[in-house]
Length: 267
Image 1: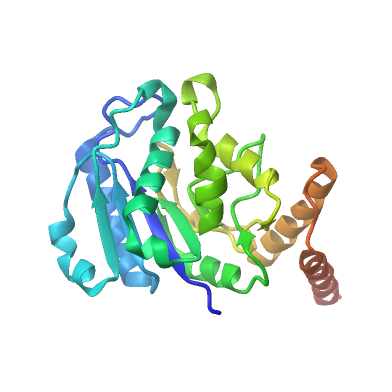
Image 2: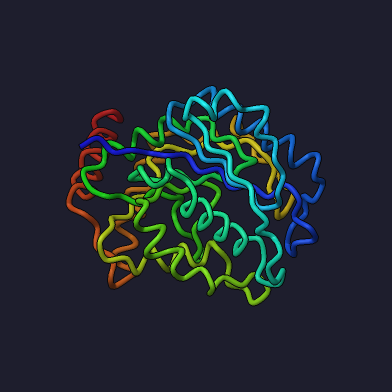
């Protein structure tokens, strides 16, 4: 059966003094959310769920997409928790609310979770890569320092609900345990799912809410084939580092094929 994917854009227009957040200008954040949402509606074919947690409702501007069933717009009062837990905990609450309310998410198999202000230029290619996997596959950036970059993740829906969000209360930015730490720990301890890093460089445009750093897709000069080779090689490295991680056979085969192709190409 064909896998069903939904893009989930998480949003917080008014952070309200959230710790570890540099980008606090609500008008600028709103502009970025609109720009990103417009991009995904224009450049993708997947259903989209936009979930915002400060009661900022600009859904009237997208009523045509909403009425057609392409877009679900959710906003709720979800930013009034203990701020010491941080924005990562807030994002987990956004995801939880989206799963609770959204009919689109209720019908999907995989969730493409994207930080809602960011534009992933090659998102269609990344979804296509995941669709080609022969089993339920988690795809993210490669882990670093026991964290996984959460700007973009492709996750089985049941993993999100039953594994990741079930442990959301452990997130506490002030204590140094971020959303990214929990994502890493949950993926590494998973039993049922296969983890494969992205096979193409995610081309991201936008601004980091935490640091204010600029992400520019045109600065990603890394060769895509080299990137795939390195990511697959890192999967083998994970097997040596983590006792409960075992590289799937199809990944091993892919590594050998890529190595052979690179060797032949270099001749």
